[in-house]
Length: 518
Image 1 (tube, rainbow, N blue to C red):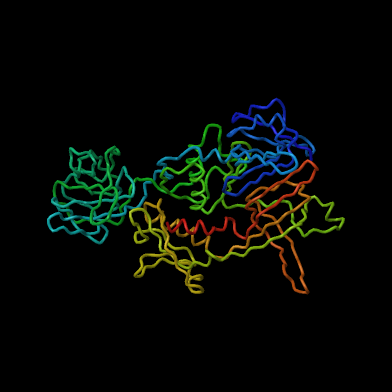
Image 2 (cartoon, helix red, strand yellow):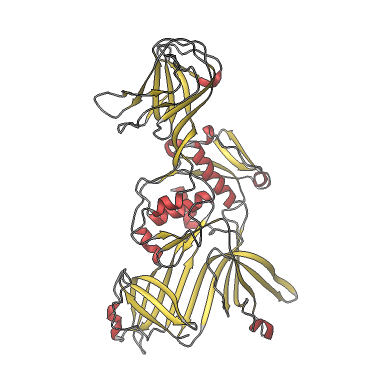
């Protein structure tokens, strides 16, 4: 296929006098939930090579049979090859447009949305004289006017929702303080509240919401060795006997809007393609970022949800959730059979590599640790079927009961972005799911690709080989496409190399394993 290369600025305006028609090869690689890359080779003597400058864009066009964009990328590397004899050549390479998402940070973005039913991490009655604490839901009790009610959340919260089934009948009003970083107050600062539990001057006379405006100076502190955002309440007169059954907060909670929240920080011109993919994640999560790039935040969001994304058309991102589109192509071992050569639904495997990786798999138990040494001790999540929560001398853990019984592999996992036990649980659960089985990865080189195929698609592979009477391979299954490298030359030769896997995510490398320990 004849092709040519335009050099453009970031706005898509051509920078060369005409297209580069001397390019010998063009190679474009797309990757699932990662940035892709490109490279092309051309003679250095072509005067139009003067337009090739760092951070400009190279866009390859071809006739297949109509005008078709073959690939596009951001120029980052320009290498000159000077052989002992022969033509001096330029190799131009870089990443695809997802590279632009590394140029912006999400700052302190919290992926969350307001909820009125976030469980309070702590809800206690505190006696400052005896320095004792009683859990509010431990049974019937009265609130003495010299005691405090302490409520803790992982994030600043704007309401406390006590649920009671025995109510106060004494006249009493409720006041509140928050822990402030304002030096004038030296800690606890009074805040105005609206008491939705008050009836006829009697606080805690019904279930309801105690609300306030979020103060700008609210700071984290520790009480009873538990760190978080604390409010404390006091009654003017001792109450009658009351009984709390639940204490909830109006606070940030899980959301499925993570993709949109992250993409809001992308450079101008970028969008989330909800028509091709999805505008939300299938799994609701809550997470606190700390200066990650937009691309790194998307990768983390994909890890937390167990979902994937890919580059769409132009500056668009396609969020795939967990549903995988099945390509109409079927990859089969190369044959000269006429019916195969003339079947556009079949591509032919000309090279085949297989890798079974169990280095990081078959994990039975994870001991996760979050921010400020948070553990799973306070999680409100329930372990799904086949999983179990527990604790031992090493700490609190989540385990895959089948893998634990079979292999007994345990790991310690630091999850720096987890501020709550529930966030920690979600991260540990996704990690266990990914590490349940060994990954089977295949590298295929195929020809006769006549239909579109995208990373994240599933493709049926049929490959059977017999060596010395021994069946070396007998594969007939669907696999997830992790990577596609499309190579073209001016002789009309096109090959497509794919990395496919039995699982819809990349196997973790040794370097990534080491990084988790640092």
